[in-house]
Image (cartoon, rainbow, N blue to C red; front, top):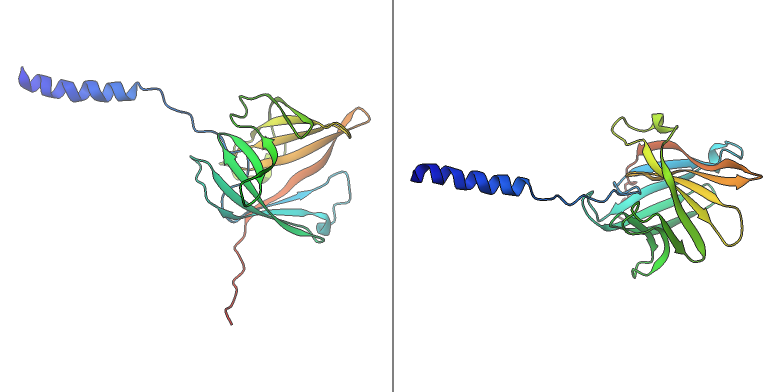
Length: 199
C-alpha cells in the first residue's frame, strides 16, 4: 500500500501542475532580432533604389519572452538616425535613452486594447488580415497581422499592418476615398555590423 501511495503522490502533483493556467507570452509587434534588416519603399512614388528606407536592428536587450529595448538604425540616401523602441506586454513605444516616451505606437496588452489616443491621434484596431507580400518573408514567419487605423486631428487617415516580430510591413493613406499604399516592406534579410579597425 505504501509503495502505491509513493507512486501516486508524484503523479497527482504532476497532473496538478499540468492543469495550471499558462500565461500567454505577448506577441512582439516590431523587429527585435539583432542584424535583421528591412527595406521599405513608397509604391505611390518612383521605385528608385535611392528612395528606399532601411531599418536595421543594431542592438537588442530582449528575448521573445520578455520586455526590452531595441535600437534601430533608420537610414536612406539622404538621412540616418538611430531610434530606441521599448517593447512591453505587447505594446510598443518610441523612447529616449532616459526612458521618456516620445510616442506610443501600440498600447500595452495590444491587440486586446482596441482603441487608444496618443498626442491627439486616435488609433483603432481594424482587424486581422494576411499580408499579400508575405512571399518575401521566411516560411517560419507569421503572415497574419493586425491593421491599425490612425486618425490625426489634421491630415489624412492612415492604416498600418503590423506583423509579429516585424512590426509595420505596409501603411496605406486615405486619398479621395481610396486607400493608397505609401510605405511597404520590399526586402528582408540580415546584415553584419561593419568591422572597425583600431588605430
